[in-house]
Image 1 (cartoon, rainbow, N blue to C red):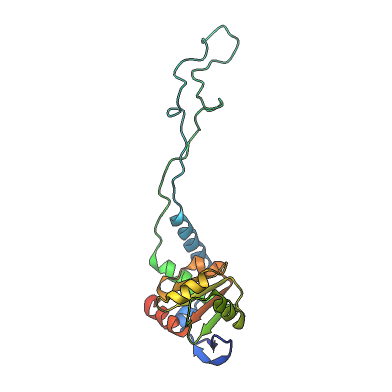
Image 2: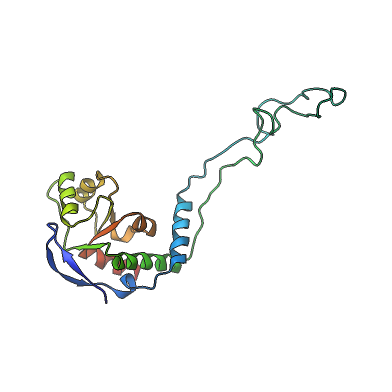
Length: 207
């Protein structure tokens, strides 16, 4: 089992923790990670884009000029796609981009990313994360103490309004409950800051 040191909010080493092999020592599956991120981004798309075809554009009901005798190419409507103000060829319409991928693939991708965080020394384990008040300044100090840059993904076991509100004002920093973490957010943050309780929660939910 992989072992990492446990820090307190002052950045002091207060012990060591053994990490679960399933979560933090898995085989890296790059294809599963790619497919999962692609799926998450697709599911986030609103799909509200819309443009009008030549059948929907206003006007153009009359033939612009007679068929023969003008020396010009024949035209049936001034709302054809090649005219200014004409319709759009294959115009985009509102659609649902979301789709599903297998649960086992999502799990494999999550295990892969968590393992890579350990391998790349991007995992920081805290014994606990408690704040006495709503202070972004304190949150900044904690990140500095544990050598986590501003782009940190803070994972806690349960809802903590003081922690959430204090860290959310830091640009690039996000706070999430352990049971709601996802592959895309893990990848786009430089450091994973997680409490011991949150690690236990991960084992309960994702194994």
